[in-house]
Every structure is written in C-alpha cells, then in structure tokens.
Amino acid sequence: MSNLALTALTASTALGEGVVPLLSALKEGRSGLKACDFEGASINTWVGEVPAVDAEVLPPALHAYDCRNNRLALLGLRADGFEEAVRNAMARYGADRVALILGTSTSGILSAEQAYRERDAEGALPEWFDYRATHNTASVGAFVREYLGLRGPVSVVSTACSSSAKAFAAADRLISAGLADAAVVGGVDSLCLTTLYGFSSLELTSAEPCRPGDVARKGLSIGEAAAFVLLEPVSGSAEEITLAGWGESSDAHHMSAPHPEGRGSRAAMQAALVRAGLQASDIDYINLHGTATPANDASEGAAVAAIFDKGVPCSSTKGMTGHTLGAAGALEAVICALSLRHGVLPASVGTQTPDPQIPLELVLKPGGTRPLRHVLSNSFGFGGSNCCLILSHRGQS
Image (cartoon, rainbow, N blue to C red; front, side, top):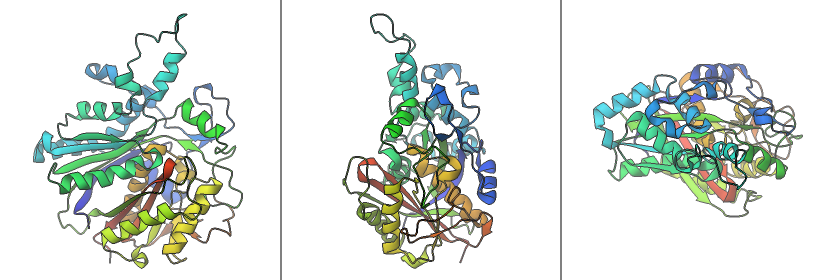
C-alpha cells in the first residue's frame, strides 16, 4: 500500500477555475461542453474549453515558455491556494526534495501550428517560435519547475490518455526509492487542431455532447484541463485522502483500439487492488475511462464486469469536462478525491440510455450522496498503455 496522501489539489476545466465549480457541477450534473469554434476548426463536434486561458500572462522571466499549454498550467497553479501549498512543502522538505512529475499528450503543439501559418516564402518558421520551450513535451515540466522554483527530480510522462495517472505511480516509486520526500504530480493538456482533426479523421469525435456508455454513443468530446496534486507522506489524520494503490499494464493490442476483452485494463485494475491490499468488493465507486467511443466503452465494460460485482456504482465524468487526454488521469483523480471528501457520487452526464451490452451500474442521476471509502479511477491510452489509481478516505469506515 502506498504511504502517500493528497495534501493539496486543484483542477481547472471547462467548468471553471479551481475545484469549486467542479464540485458544484458534480453535485448538479452540469456539463461544460460547448459547440466547437476553437481556432476556426471546421469540425462538427463539441469541446471542453477552459475559459480565460489566453488572458493569463507568464512572468517576464519565463516569457520564452509562452504558449497556450503553459498559460493553462499557470492558471491551474494559481487556483485553490495550490501554489502556496507547494511553496510551504518546499520550506518543509527543501526545494531539492520535492519532485515534479506531470503528464501531457500534445503539450504546446498549438504553438507549432500557429508558427506553420507564419512560414516565410522559403518555408522558414518565424523567429518567435521556440520548439524547446513551447512545443516540446517537456516544456510544461520545465515551465512549472522554474515558476515554482522546484529543484528536485522532474519528468514528463507522455503515454497518451494514461499520462497523468502514471505520474502518480512514478511519484510513488520515486519517493519509495528515497529520491524525494514529496511530489507535485498532475497533468496539463490544452486544445489544439492536431488532436481535433486527428480524432476526427479516426471517426472518434461526436457531433453532439458525448454520451458515455450509451447505446447510441457516437464518440468523444475533446477537452482541456490543468490538474495538480501535492503528494506527501501520510500523517495519520482521519480526514486524509490517500493514494492507496495503483496498477499499470501495456497490452499493445492495437495502435489506437483497446483489446476487445479489456485484457490490459483488467490487468491494471487487478494490480491496483493487489497493491492497495483491497478486494474488489471494497471499491465503493469506479470513475470509468469512459470516452463514449463504441470500442472503448465496450472493452472497459467487459474488464470491469470481469472483476467487480454489477452493483458497484460507475460513471464517466467526461460528459462534464470532455476527454482531457493527457490531463485526464490527474483530473479524474481530483474528481475522485472530491467524491471521497464530500460523499458525492458523480453521474455519467450525457448518458441517456445505457447500453445493455455493457453490464455496469451507471449512475444516471446527479446529486447522489453516500459515504465512500475506496474509489477506483481508470485511465487508458492509445497503444494499450493502461493505468488504474485507487484513492481512499481514511476517515470513512
């Protein structure tokens, strides 16, 4: 079992900045999706766009990192007192003993898209474009490290949609090895045309708000988010939310499709249960990866049904936020932590008629409350990169 607690957390999504609007939406079953008009994209789909991202201004000393993804990261860090919590942790442990592990999929690729539009007659990119500080996958890690003044180990995980869930597992390994005393983990992924057109070309986007697990589901709604968590050693407080366990797997079944029987995702969930020292019957709620694509929902449904009793409540929260890709794992870990802390059972917003071929107990009505002690969150990425997190509330029995 992990000995780490989630001592501070924040998430900024299409629902608004910080956890207050997110928690409100979880209670009300409200969606932040809207018809896509991002960067003039000619795609009939819906997206989860975070408001006011481009109003963020990076400090002058960090202007080289200016891109939408890093502005989104800054907006996230400034919410919920998270930045202050990290600085307090640095004072306790030392800046060199707080690690930083983030997940992203496309990072600042929008900046490259914008630069390509400004090529000169010879095809040269404009002078303002800095690949290392903006487009590069590691950019968000470098920016957050410099902004916060962290000097411990830093890495960026990019394994598609499992990226920021795997950041939790990486942090646990790092701290267990004695290489850090605490860690900032999370995920930042911003909208860009590459993902919008890419998923559209795969015929995976929906022309209506996504409907996870629905018999008439047509595909996903892409979103963006910045979600961060501070992990520290458990203190024993009854109010602590802890990282009880995690599991990873790679089934490598197909470049972009999950194994139809969910073999890889099943292995990740079983590994998480073993590491947490829990039985399947101990899980009170499952936050599904639930992308609303036909193949993903069927595969995940088969995997979950093979391990858990049908009565365990399940939902996908992507109908509220959109699929935030590399940020999804961290965002949904924050959602699970809020659910544990407030006893909120998130509804599967957008689901109208559950697919009878998916034998899960989907939560359809918002506002449900119940004591929750152990919750499980799934994050599955292209290429069969799977990660499962289990969070626990020490004070519940």
